[in-house]
Length: 247
Ligand SMILES: O=C(CO)[C@@H](O)[C@H](O)[C@H](O)[C@H](O)COP(=O)(O)O
Image (cartoon, rainbow, N blue to C red):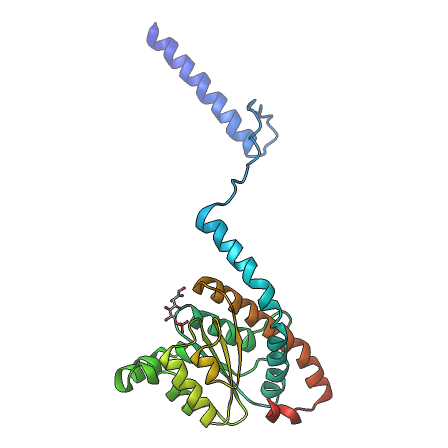
């Protein structure tokens, strides 16, 4: 008797489950909703320690950085004339700065906001075969300089990114760029530093931590791209790139 009762109960439960499943599948069967208490709204705990400090340091560095935004704008405008005139941008950095340099070239070869023609921009560190061969055969300090001598032409732009402003391979690249008649622009951490001194122009982020400098370098990269796109409309409409050599 007990076995028959159990079997009957099991069958009823299975039938109920089947009805629920069918309802959930949307075949019109009514499914009774479970009465559960509404989930409490999530409360974001306040950030403390290094996380709060990270935001504070960024905020602190942003105001003085904003005062230098004119440099980024000027770079973007002149870069538009150089690239639209058939010139090229070479960019390089180490570690996190390599990623930022590559971010800039990607925005120019691809696009920033709106559709526009592609432009010649090369992240030197991204050529892993050249970079490793040069490092192996000539030493790490030559990895960018040798590529600058290979690809850089008079009137082109060389953008070098460094948080310390002291990386030897970027200092050699700046020297090679100037020898080639390129415009050498440096995005660095606090001034003074050797890379800023060895470049034609620099935008130096006054922040104590490498992370903050890198974050504001990305902002600078985007500001250059915004100015580039805005200036490009005038350059292409005017059809004049005569002043590319002024860059
Ligand atoms: O991203 C970080 C630290 O945040 C590191 O990878 C950092 O980029 C590397 O230590 C670089 O070698 C530093 O070079 P630099 O920016 O001083 O020229």
